[in-house]
Amino acid sequence: MSVLRWAPAAAILMVALAGNQFHSASAEGSAQATLTLRATVPAACAITLSSENALLDLNSGVTNLPVATVEERCNAANGYTVSITSKNGGSLASGTANIGYTMSYGDNSTGNGALAAERSASGAARQTTLSVSVPAASNRVAGDYEDTVTISIAAK
Image (cartoon, rainbow, N blue to C red):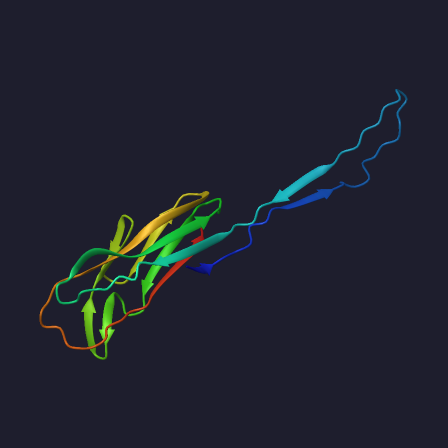
């Protein structure tokens, strides 16, 4: 497992006395003072990636083969976005040879190598599967094919 992005999630509490608000005793023998409490919880977003160590059969093809499980966590008040991008624009490359593929992330899919999943505000962990589909073809050019997929999370 590797953590791709993390922000501190510690809550900060500040106590401030607002000006000189201590009052001397009045004629009735009472006094009052005010105290303002303030607290901040910073937005914290993190992704943990678990690879499925899947092997893509480029000749037979694969359909929705799970390649990773992504655990997303973000407490941003306006929700967050998980973005997935492919270095090669949705293609496995070997030299000048390319094989297009489709990525699926939960209910979202793309064949162009870029997708985004919008999420509602929540501090709870959410697990989503990243899957890949490659069409079958028997006339592939020999080579070692690869692409780099980047998964990021950002508060809205």
